Picture 1 (cartoon, helix red, strand yellow):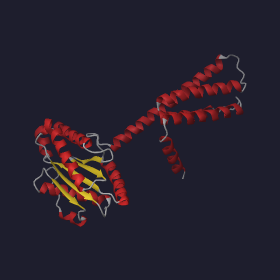
Picture 2 (tube, rainbow, N blue to C red; picture 1 turned 180 degrees about the vertical axis):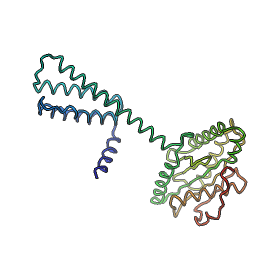
Picture 3 (cartoon, helix red, strand yellow; picture 1 turned 30 degrees about the vertical axis):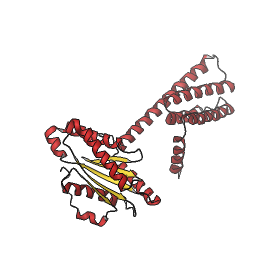
Picture 4 (tube, one colour; picture 1 turned 90 degrees about the vertical axis):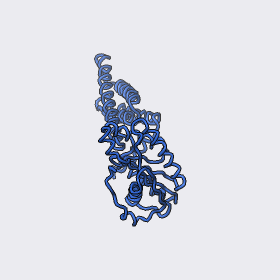
Length: 301
């Protein structure tokens, strides 16, 4: 229950603008200041200032972290002086305030760095390192979401499964560096030829998948033809002879589950290979039961 509430709070704060986060953090500092003043100088609650500093650091970044650290330090200093804390020298509370400022700044810096590190790791987990497109796990999550929407809204959805023809030959003859460059160019061409709402993913090796949301067969045929032209142009400088076999299927009604949808597109891709490679095989609402009848040759073909 607590984890659910914290997740909801995190989602709420993450959706706010930097200025809204600064306003909330400033309000938190104001509450801590009043509490600090009312409890008097004998009871130290300076650690509570870390809450607004941490909030600003996590959700707004380094500048907000520095701003809130300074504001928290000034607030603590004002509360300490206003509470009548006796000091032999004015330099003593000033020194204490500077020490706290350093502590707040260090905390904010660590929080910002931790957040950046976590986001980088999350991004690495989401994307394929070589090509920059989505990784398989993210592809499956997004596809499952898109299938649910298509099922609920009654809208068509198209999946295109792409495999590079004779990719192993390219690696053996030209080297893996050329092969890696070709894969990067393929990923870039697929991303540039699709919409932000669509999904481009590398499923492993030389296999890619494209999910076209709200796309029927006619629009899908146009899009795939455009992608094939873009792939030829992109690969021209490094591997002009390289081609792709593509299986594409449009789901209208009924919309199948995740595994059935992927397997159908995969089977059509292998059918394109059986027909001689360098071609596209399209289907609409393919009978899922017929998938098992399509044999799967070595993907290096």
